[in-house]
Image (cartoon, rainbow, N blue to C red; front, side, top):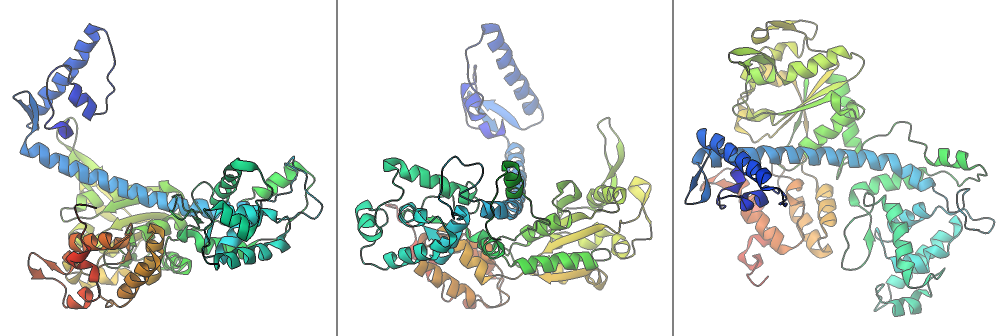
Length: 537
């Protein structure tokens, strides 16, 4: 209802219904009256608590209503951001799981009805990946249909790749022009007529596992591209692929094809897999007595790294992971526990996030549980953690939580991962007792991650190289990282990014907050008004 401020307020409240995405339908008059009365009842409630009012037939929000809406929208955005982090984690897990199976798929197998000559041993999805890796991570369906589909044996793939590579060097080469392709690469084989593109798109879709391993969007050049996020996985899969096998039994083939990896691992998007494994190892080594803190400026992916490490430690079990985000008003009662208002009036004990996940960990001592504290440095850490500073280290000692009237021992199988920005002022004020309990691991800005992000966003090669060179020359203490460049495609995007985001890391309210802003400003030519978007665009 708060989002409906400014809409017309009169029966049958069609504008409000539309805004709330409630479908209008023809109903009996008495039922329509009931529906309208529900709106009036809600309005009376919201008006009575000072959120909404009606003036001259228009619904209006009070100042409190507008503030409440802003707070709700911020919380919804945080939930959406967290969902995206989980989605990214599961994409990595899914890719790791399915890639070996896709690589094993054989053209000639007991399930197919198509006759293939003796000696056919090609694995078409693996062949597509191999071809794309040799050819700038891209392949056009016309190239596939004229070269790759002629191969029935693994030994023929290298020759097909060479034909495509040579063709791309010729002047005027255009895979979107069938006449040129007939001349340079020959006819499609086997020729399935005008609908051959549909058949080849099916092969692309299989090699992509829908839109996971290959990019989902159509590029103007008509090529399909490998998803940069999973190129390391593709390389590992190609290298680890076994020899083709002969099967006569359908069941045996399907069981072999669908055989899951023994220990599926997770791959960090735009990151080094070894780096992720290092953090997992640090958590296993020190997580029973210290907080593992991932430290880095805004935009280096600390939260996502924490989520993926948590997924690895918990073996992908989301019920063993709990995330809380600290802020300036976060309290001991919210984190550990205390008294909270009850529905019937008065107060009742309410366990905080730590006690909740800790009880789950104590109930399953053989399974690792993970508490992620996002933005640790934004709260008054000493007050929020309280006596936990001692008992995180000495976990065999129970302590009393007064508000719960309960003694608590921190489970040895509970790992606490925190993220924090070293430029936050509260980091400077952390006392030695807290620093001693932190195992700090730096998550630095990454040149390689930036390049992968810009490639994934579709930025043109020359511009991407310029941005990466500028980024590579930034000082080690630059206050932002590669993640802020997600979605940047051209100069106008870069101009807007500077004027709407990056420059505020250097100066705020006319005050310089970074010691030498010129070090960062120099070379970022896109901040110039020359690159601003025009009204015509």
